[in-house]
Length: 423
Image (cartoon, rainbow, N blue to C red; front, side):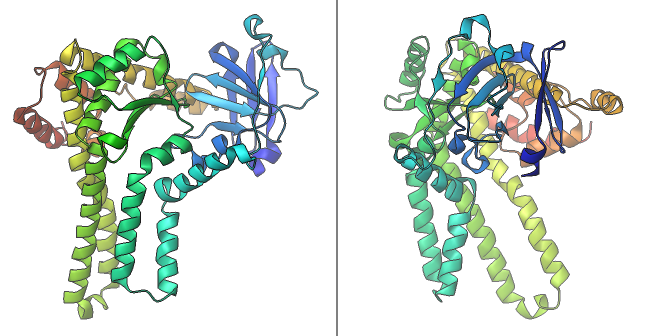
């Protein structure tokens, strides 16, 4: 609320820079970085609300329900509602002087009911745990036992997994890709993978990303962000091949099952340990607190064991679907990484900082994601992240033959620990 109250927008004509100033931060947007301009009749609340977004939120500078300008910069999309008396002529290039307004219905309009329901359900069950917490609380108040509660929660989880493709399609405002230049590439990759009934969608985002959704092949889809579609077609083909393997191997379903099994084993172990040492634990509250904290801390490390294996497999098996094999997949990941790094650098550069902070930022500037980082950051990425570091993924493709084998599993396993140690 304070952001909206304190927000002021200024245009510096001599600099050709748009400034967004508030009590919390000051950002500058050089118009030379502006790639797209559009106007909406009002803010699309269902798109801007942070809980309804899977990716990093857009910069929402809207302060009213009036005409909304959407500006696409490298690594960031900016929405704002200028005063009706202010001229936006500085944004209008000659080629878009006749730009038409995109009509946006109010979120409560009947045409948006399906979107509203889908996004609410996504926020409660996919992005958060509100629905699960509400069910547990309700059952506890009703005096329902733990066995029945567990059964209902498992069934609810299975139901959510089964409809996840439909929910995410609605929640992320996905649209089928209809680019005539991309359709032959999509057809080639997925026919080689033996997948003839997988739909490919696009969802709007300033991030470069692609992902597979769905519990099984019959209910799976692949989505690419709108920014990803701006990559060279060779890179897009590699990304599609990677996601095709996730669909073919049912990685979304297996990942959910393994995660559920892991959490179940942890809870069962805690329950049995508590039963066996109940009297002692009642007098060792510090030990209990530290143990629970350690379990929560280590859970991502256990999960990364199977998620990273799936990612490495998708890289190397995906390469078999490409004409260029490992070399093309490595090049696809390299291009993706370079575009990501450039967008992040641009996005960070929009913040206005003092000279001393600028100098410190230059000194602390992160190296390219394609370069081998210090051992501590390698340790964090290899042991806790869902993907191995990008430099290693590219290197493993460049230094091995196209295909998938036990030897590549051993390579990843050894690298996972060797790369986590100090140089």
